[in-house]
Every structure is written in structure tokens, then in C-alpha cells.
Image (tube, rainbow, N blue to C red; front, side, top):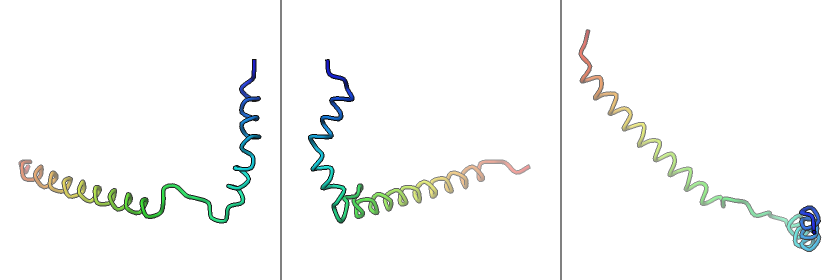
Length: 69
């Protein structure tokens, strides 16, 4: 019966050269890529702008329906 720790350590030992290469790389890969992230943030901002417009319209409609006291 092989322990999980033994299996994990064996896997690390087998991949040691790959791990060392990644640590020594000059420019590590980032996720998400910068271009995609800025697109995603712009899409979120556009969606939030749309929600604010809808909220303002709903508030104006409520104000019109609410009787003055």
C-alpha cells in the first residue's frame, strides 16, 4: 500500500526539472492574459452602466406613480 504523501513526493521528484525551469523563467506566464482581462473589465463596466440607467429609469417611473402627500 503506497501512501498519498509518497505518491505526491514521487510525482514532484519526477517533475523536478520542469518545476526548476518554470522557476528560472524570465517572464512567468500570467493568467488571465492582459488583453483578455481588460476586455472583461470593459464588458463589466458596460454592463454596470446599463444597470445604472435601468435603475434611474425605474426610480423616475416610481416617482411619477407615487402620489404627493
